[in-house]
Length: 530
Image (cartoon, rainbow, N blue to C red; front, side, top):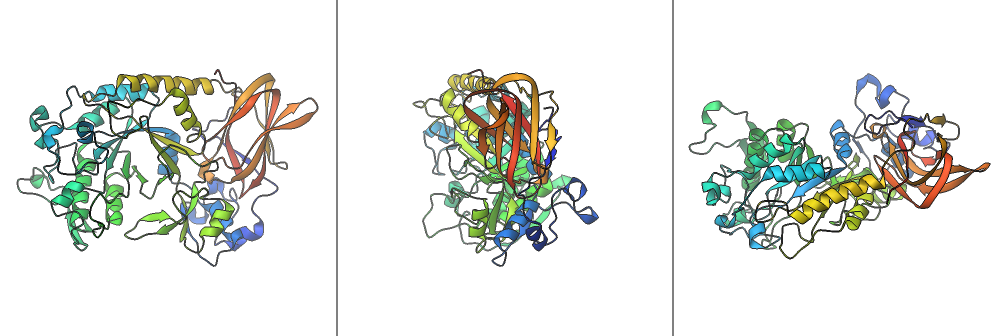
C-alpha cells in the first residue's frame, strides 16, 4: 500500500456506525469531517484545536465536538518526530543528587572533556530527531552565561568562566541535523535563596528584556515586550528571552510544574500566560511541552502510554493561562466517550493535547556511576508502548562527568535503533494498491502473494482529527475473512504485535466504530526479523 504517514496521502473510510447526524447537528457548527474540502470550515477558518464544552453538553454532543477538534501544524510536526531525546546535565551530575539545593558551589561544574558533537552523533545514530537540554534544572544553575544570575557557568573555573554549554549544544545538534529543544525549570531553588522565587510579589507590567547595568544589548534597541509577571516571573521571562534570541531557532520549550523544595507555606504562582506569549512571539514554531498548551505529560515517568491514548482530551483552565487536566493526570482513560462524559462537569474545553512519554535510559535522570542503561528489550517494550500507542517517546540519556554520553549508553542507542528496524523491517504492503469499500468501512490490501505477517502499523490522517474507536484487522484465509487482531484507538501511530505470524495474501482493515469519517494514512504489514 503506497500510503505514507509522513506525506498524509490518506484514504477516507466511512463507517456505518459513525457519530449520528443528530449528535453532529447538535454541536455548534458541527459537520461530518470531509463535508468541507480539507476539513476546513466556511470562510476559510482553520478547524479548532480547542472547543468549549460545559455541563449542558450531552454525551452525544461531546463526541460530536471531539470529532471536530484538529491539531495545529505545530502539533502535527511534533507528532511526526516519534522519538526525542532529553539530556539532564548540570551541577547534579557532579554532586550525585537528582534534585539540587540551589546553594551549590558553581565551581563543582567541571566537565573534563565536554564534546557536544559526540552527543549529537550518538543521538543521530540512535534515530533521534530532536533533543532537549536541561538549560536550568530545579537547582537554578544555568548552562549558559545569563545576565540575570551568577549561579551559572560564569562562576565556574571551567573554561575560565567563559563556557557556554547551550551554545555548543545548539551548534552541534544543527550540525548533525537534529532539532534543538530547551528545558528551563520553573522551579528555582537558587532564586528562592536570593529572595526572588516565591517572595509573594504581585503581578505587574514588566518590560522584557529588562536591561541590566552594562547590558551589551543597550545600544541595539532589542525587540521588547510588556508582560504581566511577578518578580520571579520576570526573571523567567528574561532568561527565556536570552535563550530564544541568542542561540538560533528553538523547536521545543519544555516545562514542568514543580514548585521546588521550599517551605509548604511558600508558593510561586507561575506566569504561564506571559511565558507562553513570549515564546509564541519569539519562537512561533516551537512546541511547548509538557506543562504547555501543545503537549501533555502522559502521567508517568516510565515512558508508557495508555493502551488507548486519545489526543483529544477534556481540559480546564487552572489560572494564569495554564491549561490542565480535567481528569486526574494519571487517570487510565483520558479521552473515551465515557471519559468525556465524566469530565463535563469540570472541563471547559476539549483540546488536541497529545501525550509525551518521558523515561530515562538509566534509573536516574542525572548520571550516576553505579547505574547502567536499560536493556534493548526494555527499550523496545517502551517504544511499542509509547510510539506504538499514539505518543512521542522522550528518552533521557544523561552525560557523565566528562561531559560525554557514556560508552554503554551510546552502544545501547545504536542497538535500540537496529532492534526497531528489525521489528518493522519492510512494509510488505508498500507498492500495492489498496481497495476502499465505503459501504463496509474497510480498506483491503492485496500483497500479490501470501506473506507471513506479525506486526501491523496503523495511522489516521490526524489533520482530520482522531476518529477511530474500534476496528478489526482481518486476513483472507481459505474462502473467508478471519479476524487477526482488534484495536480501539489509532491516532497518529499504532503498532500491533500479533501472537504469532499469520500467512495471507489479502488483508483488510475494517472500521466498526468511529466518531466521524476515518481517514487511514497507513496500513503497514510487516514480518519481524527478531
